[in-house]
Length: 436
Image (cartoon, rainbow, N blue to C red; front, side, top):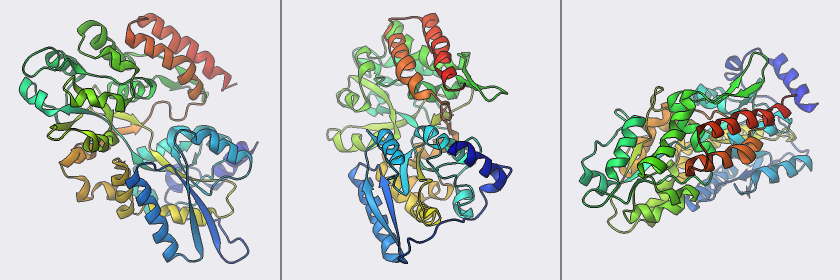
């Protein structure tokens, strides 16, 4: 009931997202004592990121004596359940750090404030439309996307140089076919060879499969005229998973043991020359810098390109405001402060990720070739909302259907037809329960 009421109110407030994103704020107030107190729950976990967030809170508090912010430490491991409990117990923080692919149930459930009429024009204009789409559910905007993480190839530069393979750049990336050929050439023994050309850490295979599939036109989830979503497995959806399947089972250029690993688990093999390359999130560069043995020569390469170029899906980190907060205007003003271009750069560097804001992306500090920053920035324009971004029932489909099906397909336990049956037929039965 609350969700439907809010959608009707939003529709009355404006006819289109485009117009509302340029509006100025309203709402907010005081707690009766003349001083507003906000709670900001952050999911920052790396020391640099935690330090940057806490320092920004201190700077805000020093310059805003009438609006004081309390920093609350949250955890990515438990954030969904923790937030649900806090919403239902009317104890939600005012400002909420999360990821866009976790917002759908909270947005549709009426727990998050629609920010369209609260957003200052500067912030609304600074973040590109494709990023705003990641936090748009129905007719409302329920989070401010501020950090994003493309998937890249982190490679042993010594092995690449010795092999003589063409090294890709964002301007001239590998195609998926060339990528498969290169991993064959890098596999073996002797000069310029690794035990395996690549290691795919696919313990959690769904998001990487969907997001890299975007480069080949993969979408998987299709919304009909009636607004209902169904799953269809098209040619573009197959290219990424078929490439990995064939690298493991046909070419033997991908390490089969890595399929059950997380990203960090593959780093010792990369450092030791067992794998020539590992596809990882952009933030893993920090672990390479901190953990690589002295003298390890590495480079950051773009992921393979398909018919849609370097496009890939992302689920940015977001800042939202609780619908129950009595101080929405003040909460959005604090978010606007956190995401000023110079502050967004500080947050991005602390998390080793890319900012969404165009002004922050233009900062020279992010255009250095050191540690692959420039390669990441070059990919920013190609980032798109993850295919499952607004699909209700996606978490159940991912956990109960897609994860086991993809794991079995990558390992060779099932073939293409069984994969299609499970992803599509079983998947549509799951989604149908959420769309009655």
